[in-house]
Image (tube, rainbow, N blue to C red; front, side, top):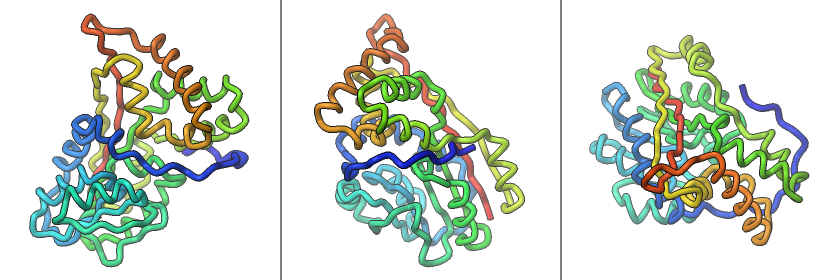
Length: 269
């Protein structure tokens, strides 16, 4: 279940997403999008939305899989949208907040790869999006499910142990927690013609603790780093790197193995 909201932390203007940092691990991040796409049941598809499209790696997959459809990417990051527009000229892109966005016309497919877990109430949003599908339409969702992994436990410990604790502990407590598969099945099965749900644990060999830091600087660390000054950023990441070195033993080739569980489901109206 979602973590209860806690006292509001003082915030600074959020930094825009860094597409270069995100795409450093493009193959690993896109693999989950490919796996999600492969499980979508076929039906005539004319209008597709890619929520939280980022730099367009998932949008590119959708244009190739549905060549006759209008594919629309939705994101609120100017940096990501600029990269996506250059990368996928066959698609259309709009700037919008996924939490507030609704399709302007009944959709055949709404695709959300590693997006909805950033939102405060993704369950409510998905129910609303189901209503916006045409009969037989599909929603395909993938969310990282790594709250209890060592990488995220280390984030929370560093947030609580440093001079920034009064700002970062409320953030750690308010982050969305992904539920169990049966919770989502029970929630959506009464609303859908079919529900396909599964979890995969990916194992990513990375270049030591530095590789793990780089991975999460482009995603999971953002809610913490956005509240810190540049000097505090450096201190936070140094402490985080030290904890990762203890948590992830090096393999004989020098790599560390990052466990990365992801929850998937495909809903058909």
